[in-house]
Length: 238
Image (cartoon, rainbow, N blue to C red; front, top):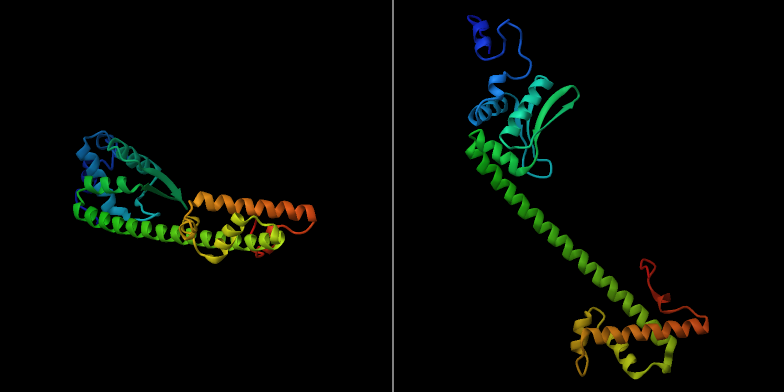
């Protein structure tokens, strides 16, 4: 937009020129020290002129491109008086003011009067947060399942080796626990306790298997032969 007639008067009235007709760098003092409504209006005008709003997510941002560092710092100060955190940064010679926190972005949009934009942005943010939470839970469950499967494979491999090392010297109650582990390879310790006859607690099952492995490892050490970890697959660490 170009104003030809009365342009200088308009520039002085809007604070673009001082009383000596010199260009104002940044924003006029009477604006930056004005009321909350004035500060919100400053941000509304700056955003309408050179502002962008990215979709909610890890890189969400409300950003305004400024003509210089003074204007950027004035906008940061105005946001601070509105109790909204904003930062000025320079990228390739371009000065920008950025608001990154989701709550702060929503608050600034409300102050600027963009109620519909806030509602749409918040709805999109909530959908993405729900999706991200669901993905984290799925990944967490998958990781737990992988760890449980690895632990079961390792336990079965060590029990087989323990029974092989001890042979007929295995106490009956420890042999029973080992055979219970081998008979239900995918079961948890709690499930193994339910399969036992009579039923046992998972701590009792774990204790018997632990004693079986310790006895076998001691026997292997005395004989100078590989212990219970000899049968572990290469991808498993002790």
